Length: 242
Image 1 (cartoon, helix red, strand yellow):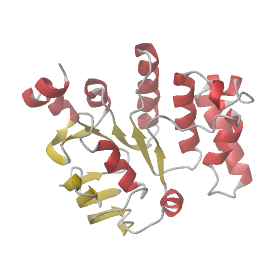
Image 2 (cartoon, rainbow, N blue to C red):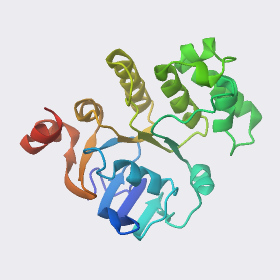
Image 3 (tube, rainbow, N blue to C red):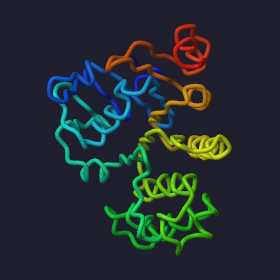
Image 4 (spheres, helix red, strand yellow):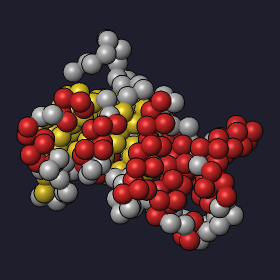
């Protein structure tokens, strides 16, 4: 499945199967993400996209299969171990600490780190990247707009210095203009070399920004390939691009 040379992928998911009781949420899902790539996972509601991300973050148990990060098996790792190894997730719905300030939320993103000077450097970097957050650093996170909360969620994840950023539905519930600015941010992160696995319902936007893509239908991968190719694939156009 290698796409660029023989180097091992940063993230390698093999034959992942997940059940909720009798419901098979994922069945034999295999995907990989290489360093520096943006890979997107598209599919209808309930296809298993968020389940895939939550299993990589080790938030939900795996029934079968294997997840490797930097050639290391993390299938049995705890969520906190996964963050320390360099995987950060921006969850669907953003999940701010509403009664804490923007600054406190950002510092929480660095909870696995103890390098105080470097944390301050990263804090400055996030405020530079997201000037709106700098203006509102003392404001309670719960009082931010939806777009600002999404920026905060991304900035908070970046505070852990991730090798891999998992983005779950970053455009959910946001106005079209705000969605465009969030995707500009994702494009900038890609340019800066951040590796991203993106779950997104707006398939058109996701495919325009990604290097490669996978289509998930009812817990199974049905199509994969270069994102530019999937943009013109008749099956993808019919099902997801209107």
